[in-house]
Length: 78
Image (tube, rainbow, N blue to C red; front, top):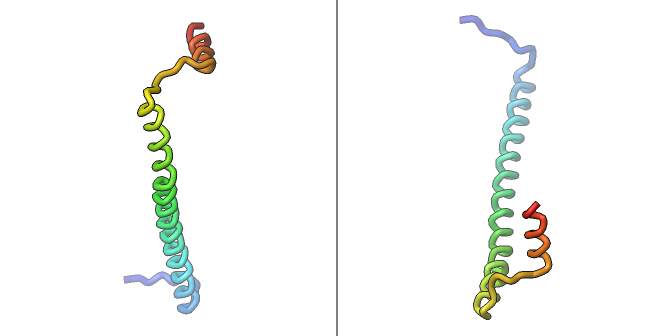
């Protein structure tokens, strides 16, 4: 079996491995933080949106022809 020397001394090789490990751990922590932030953001945003969409339907509202809707119909015809 032939051993190939990398040109680094043992302490340098260990320090390089530690740097790579720190990078991988840091990336994992950043990923977990991003997922947690997304989950917390969805919880705070979806609740008011759901309440806002139910309110007009409970009042008897629903589809309404507004100037915006009429403008859309005009652009969709052509």
